[in-house]
Length: 210
Image 1: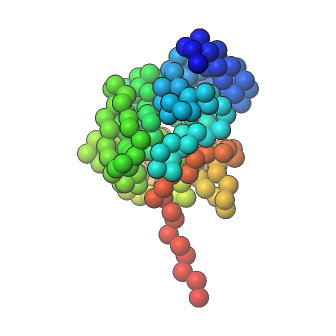
Image 2 (image 1 turned 30 degrees about the vertical axis):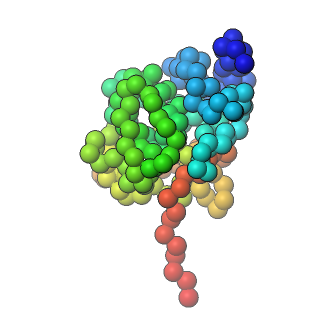
């Protein structure tokens, strides 16, 4: 497949997936129209780079559909100079978009997880739910997938009024959610149901039953 083919597919993604589905932030649209998503997809699946569904990666992980990434970026309201804690960086596609928007990105990925090579990104390897406390405080927590809950360990790494975007798993449904940290506490609101990849290691504590 040629570069021209990928450019056409990228343009079609913008017009048919993003603009028609409430991704109306022009800065987000501009970077997603420019960054080559095919470079962040396994070679054998590059033809699927712009399909609106998760793309399988190694070790049971997957890359979110483009629309999910676009909606997360829109709700994140990224400003140049923002310090971003990116959880579940996968192959680095979201990291590349955040850097293109002017953010300083610390990307967290599991040991043995997908390779990440994005200029301007600091990569930390370890449990996703532990974050990267050495770089705290952050202005934005960008969880690139769905979790049952946002752990306190991540909230504690955020500054006052920091933004948070993520997917929350609610009774088997993944919901795009966003919120802010006020007084050290995170308040999240659900925005819409969306098919998102589920990140490992974020199970909510099970309630005790008699």
